Image (cartoon, rainbow, N blue to C red; front, side, top):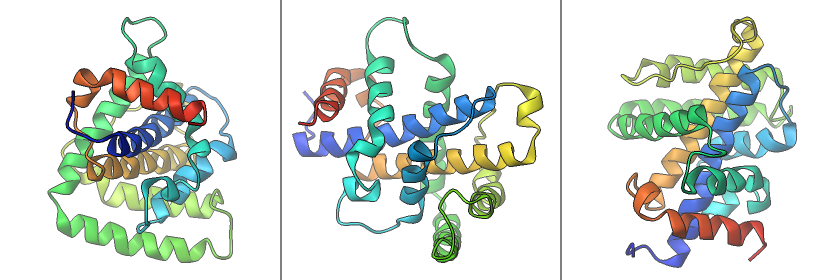
Length: 211
C-alpha cells in the first residue's frame, strides 16, 4: 500500500484526470472531431488559475473532469481491451515534460507571468475565444516546445495543418501539462500508475459515483 493518504489519492486522481482529459481532446481534435466547450473550458480555466486553496477548486468542480475520470478507469484496468495507445503515449509524454519543466525555474517564471497577462484578457472575452487559445498556443510554442521532449501528435494530416487546429492542440497540451504539474505537486509519481492502479481506479470510480 502506498503511503499516500486517501485525501492525497483523491487529489492525485483528480489532477491525473485533467491530464487524461486534455490528452483525449487532442486525439479527438487531431482526427477531425470538434471540441465540446463544456469539456475544454474547465481545462483552460485550470491553466489560468495559478493559485487555489485546493485541487478541486482549480477545475471549478470535480464534475468537470468526469470524462477524464472515466478514462483513468478504462486505461488503468488490466488488459489491452479498450485502451488507447496514443492516449497512453500522450499522458506519459506530458508527465515527462513536466519533469523537464520543473528543472527550469526561469521558464516557469516566464510562463507564470505570461499566463497572468492572458488571464486579464479573459475579463473581456470567453475562455474558448480564438484569441485566448492562440495566445496560449504561442506561449506553449515559445517555451514548452523548446524543451528536449516534444510530443508528436498523430492524426489526419490535412486537419493538423490547419492553423486554428494547431493552436487548439498546443493549448490542450498546455492544459494537460498544467494538470501534470498539479499531479506532481499533489504527490503523484509514475510508479503509482503501475503499483497503485487499484487505488487510482477506485478513487476515480468513487468520484464518478459522487462519493
